[in-house]
Length: 268
Image (tube, rainbow, N blue to C red; front, side, top):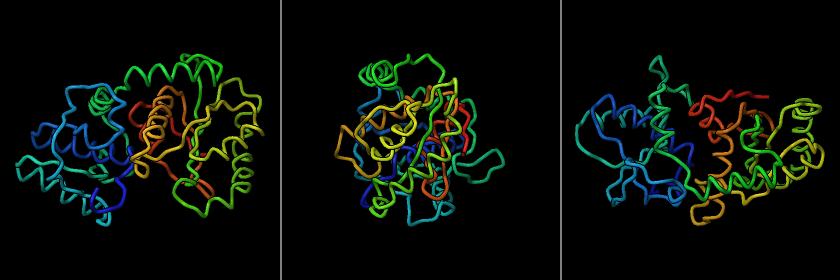
């Protein structure tokens, strides 16, 4: 990524891929994914849509351009009829033709991306181990996910607010999990927050992993691997709960899972 110090995160890139895929269908293009552009791709099986190619001539359509500007330029490139390579976190359009943050997807789009991104055997085996050794139930047991994006990895000012955040999250989450017959898996970008919440609410299932953000840490393979594992654990959930006010932030990471895999998405 040349425009910004870090590339967009995986969910943002998926959003841009969906926009590009939709335009590919509209303008009769082949859609391919360049596997050697980011270390995250090593954790997926090879599919016919992965290629290895030079990225020297890639075009970047990301901030500081507005999403409206990005969409206009992106579609104009497809209208041009020439082959091109692109990195973008573009929004894609809803059924009304309007740009929106992760709107519902058509079945054909869901099918394509669920097939294009299949976790490799090492990731799949690690997920099975986590369910048995950390969650203490099997992966076919119904469960819900609570996902909290605290921004601790990206914003140093969060460090001094951990105890306040935990108290706030506890008040939101405890009524949901206390005495519940269903299983609840906690996912968050803050190990401190996770450990404190699990201490207060032992009903929560959690596995301690190496926190990462695929758009921030591109040279730490372990953190990228664990991020992919969390992503695919979430795809098995019945419901995804999140918090988006005060001490938490909207996260494309859990929202893209909900639209790709038709999982109910609930804001507490």
